[in-house]
Amino acid sequence: MRAIDELVSEARAEIAGATTTADLREVERKYLGKSGALRGLLKSVGAMPAEERPAFGQRVNEAAARVQAEMEARASELRAGERVAQFAAERLDVSLPGRRRRVGNPHILQQTTDRIKEVFVGLGFEYLESPELEQFRYNFDALNYPEDHPAMDEQDTFYVEGDLLLRTQCTALQGRVFENRKPPIRAFTVGRTFRNEAVDRTHGHTFHQVDVFMVDEGVSMAHLKWTLGTFARAMLGPEVKIRFRPDFFPFVEPGVDYAISTPKFAGGRWLELGGAGLVHPNILEHYGIDSERYSGFAFGLGVERLPMLRYGVDDLRHFLENDLRFLEQFPA
Ligand code: FA5
Image (cartoon, rainbow, N blue to C red):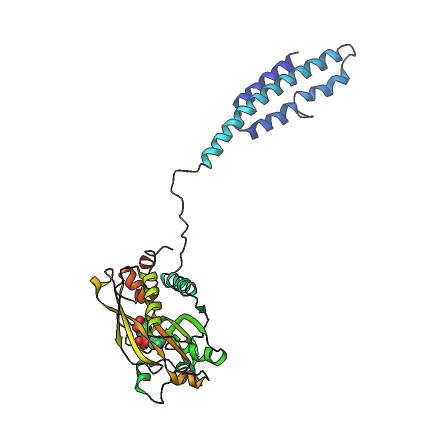
């Protein structure tokens, strides 16, 4: 029948001309839908003589099947093209360098603190926390500072209120411990200390100290020297030299300061690391510890000075400036 053939060729032309799958759906609706041009022909079947109906129905169905087959073939072509276009639009250049996630690492002072703790714990000393905001009496009175002694001027600090101040030295731990414990005592603390200080390459207003002390029978300067030497070599290497010189601190007798020389720092120039001595008998007696029977050593030192000596850092202000170009040089 001509009408059928014409409709088929019209439909084929439109299928060939479709450029998107949406166009094809439109063609499908137009020809193959229930009321579409081709299948719609079936509606007229009722008006036909009964003997023509089956053959007509069959032709319409065959024609529809052909159109359907062509439509599917074209649809899969178009879908492939559309996928390619979609891929092109969503293309990722996997060769572009990714965004690097910055992974932090512990601050060099934290690394140093961790190592200090390892070393002293390894030597049998107990680590104790201690407050940065300290009472005047622990920072000074308990440490045998006579009232208005000039040694206090060397440690001017930031007074807060009442008898609270920002501690000038970690030695303030001693009184807190002697109040509660009896010998044998081996303890240390590490923490932040503060002084009203003229800031320069080796002095900050905020810095860190370690303070270590031991009280037992028969403790002498020999124990002090051995402990300090072992610590210094563990932190800075076997080639360090230590120099002791007499010095005064109200809380020790005798008192010394000690300096370190290592080839890595300023060509071997001495850098003062800290102070030390034997715990003053006045302090032991004040806390009810028999100074005839017991003696102790104590030493304190500046934490910043250790990485200065170890890595040849020439200015301690770098440690608190948080410049990544400096900090990144000390990966953990
Ligand atoms: C003291 O602070 C004593 N408590 C040390 C001590 C402990 C002596 C036990 C005897 C027995 P001194 O003020 O010297 O001492 O400080 C000790 C160390 O802390 C110094 O050698 C230095 O390494 C460091 N230090 C002191 N002041 C500063 C500062 N302003 N900035 C950086 N480091 C400092």
